[in-house]
Image (cartoon, rainbow, N blue to C red):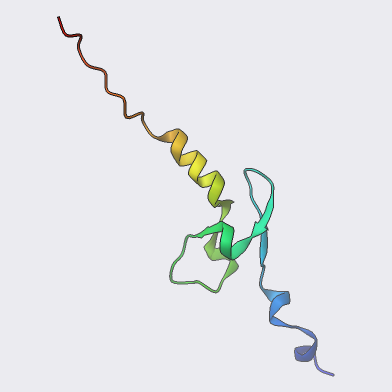
Length: 73
């Protein structure tokens, strides 16, 4: 029995990852953004912040769309 027979591809790839912000364990392929488009097969090419937390962070950082105008005198 060789070592190649004992190790499967699933042991080398990560399918779940813990989000740094919310701390939940989520699916790597579905719930995290791909940051390096040229390396789709590597687990390191996915972000460490889930999609939900990324959307919340970006929304908080945007300026409001309300514009202040001079009063109509």
